[in-house]
Image (cartoon, rainbow, N blue to C red; front, top):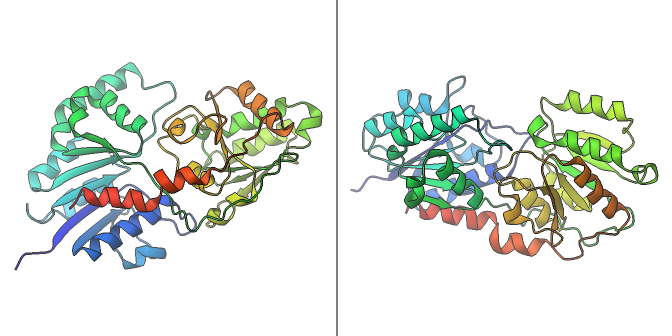
Length: 359
């Protein structure tokens, strides 16, 4: 009797019941489609929880140990145990992939979600990545970028010779659970930010841009920020410094963003680093246009003046001008933004394309 096919998925992604996003839904759905096709999936995360679909999954927690190192030391029993080993949010082209290949006959697939610095890596780091690509990329069978930007950066980082084994599978979102905005308010538009609060997300630029607005327009703007993180205290201090408490409100982390996006007219994402943002896709699916920067894969989802506005990362004056033109109704997005997500960036399409890799 033929043994059941088995897959290991290694994810440096901490599970959090108060933060359920697009990747959680992807993991749940990928596990389901594998089980429906008699494929067992062993999941390796930093921690173990049982909310949502995780309660039905086979999960191993590495706790304080690096996920991939935990997997190599504790879970590789024989060469034929796994057919595929897939990584998410794991550093690419490290020595651990050589160790895995020495202990397993599995095909290794690395999915790259990692954003790059706005000004690129230092020369020293560029050289180090090229060396790692030369030494360890041969142990990885397939590289998957979550946007064309990401796929190009993989080859840029680790070598053009990886072109033949690098593909793009776009991230996707659960469309059916996202409430849809019916009409936009062009006279008194409202804005939201949905983001982890760290410096690279550029929310400090948004605060500075609001402060630059003429006084009569500044009083009209309202921004709600959803999320938490280590940069929150700094951002609150900036808001206090510029006396913007009436304009910018922090709402904390929420688990129901799918039912919140539609309450707003525009989403703001002034990020300095991005790979391919699920929150952008979710906002568009809610028929809420997005104002964001020209980094990562943002411009693969946002067309300037069509379903949102693009500005150069870090350009506070440019962001201020966009906000001013929106508040005065000189610039507006009138077209529906949901259709693009339905046709190109749905979770179902993402799951289907990832499952094709293990068939």
